Image 1: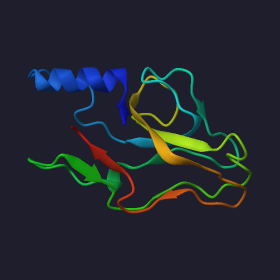
Image 2 (image 1 turned 135 degrees about the vertical axis):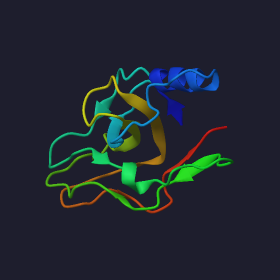
Image 3 (image 1 turned 90 degrees about the vertical axis):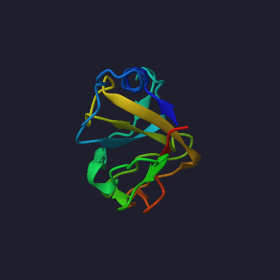
Image 4 (image 1 turned 90 degrees about the horizontal axis):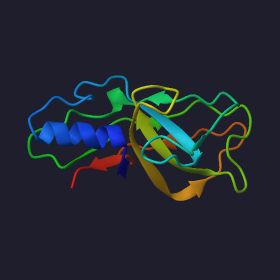
Length: 138
């Protein structure tokens, strides 16, 4: 997992007793990428067309409690059914991001590569199963 520059700063501010930007960020949007952006939100290629839309995942995660070093989704994270090919051939989905906006790149929280690229064709449903999205703070 690569935190965005903004999330890194917010985390450092939190560690030093200051207020971070994302203490109560809602909604949290999961977005799919065929080319991952960098942590500043530059250079990526987000999936487009064919009924693609970012998905709000805030309700799919528990509130972390004292002593937790990771959280995982407690509900399936399901994207809309593709009405055209989203990612095929060399342009497969290679990762996802979390942000506080469903569009744009200035609100990134983090960017994560998938273990392997995924093809998403017409009529397919892209989904992260329960427990498949795990976020840890080392």
